[in-house]
Length: 432
Image (cartoon, rainbow, N blue to C red; front, side, top):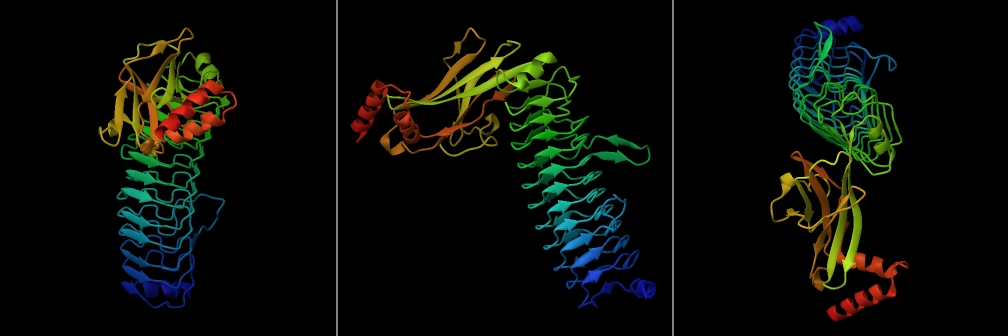
């Protein structure tokens, strides 16, 4: 019966005849070379290989589809549900939560995928999608091995993703049998990413910076032959590898407690907290260690001032070309407070004119706002410091506060002397 169905389907271009179909079985429309359009809105599941090599399929309507099913979830195959649908241009599956392995492999004209409910992208799902330029998967938490291998994707945004599989974004030469650098992918946004498998970002050749605030674990060779030269990972705990690009910077913190990477990259720079495991690791491989530390906020009672304090340390004692600050009078994160965003209106930059070189090798400097009027006591200020060495900027974390909040902290602090508190109360009373 299945075979006769194949012959019937292969003789027509459009299918609208399955109003009660709930499951499209394995291989049902396989190699229907003339099939161009199909409406299966009643279908809830599609089995592995169901539409494989429907070369001319352009339009698919499956509005109630919730799942694509692997034939064997333990084995990564080479072909999946829509493998080889080389004319498929757009995919809109509003209810699908799971994509099987290789689901869209070799969909060479696919340039748009709307998948708002997908939670899992399995292995090689979008491999060899040469026309896919960008993808936004708002609910995906897990991305499998080689998911975008040989894809021409340039922009990838995964706001909820927590893990990425091996060789996820790499290019591969099938004829010669070796990996190549992917020179297309320029932007990866994954703020909740926690785990990168072995070779996850290997051979990525256009991305230079990764901002991963929740990143905890790095697999072996995760950045092998990659152009990524700046990794912000303040939650990093365990690393089997680090950046391999020349003059790379890894920003970690005291959270890092284990790094097994044999640092053959002698130009690698570690930025973290002094007296931490990260500093010990850097010293053990004679790597440059840098600490740009925010020292907190304080009040100046003499002129209604708000002070943000910072310190800088470089283990190699290189000449610092400039100390300074980037700040704004609103809530801001790292992506905004960078020198390239300075507009002298909403984001400002100030060179530090006064700084003190300490005997322990650190340099301290402050950003001070004076004469703050009472009407601006609750104005939020976000600020960070920077130091420039060899034209490269090293930033501190961001301090955020307002005059009113710091005042309350000072008055509630038992370790601050009464004279300071009285002076602060006098200042506040004068403002009333």
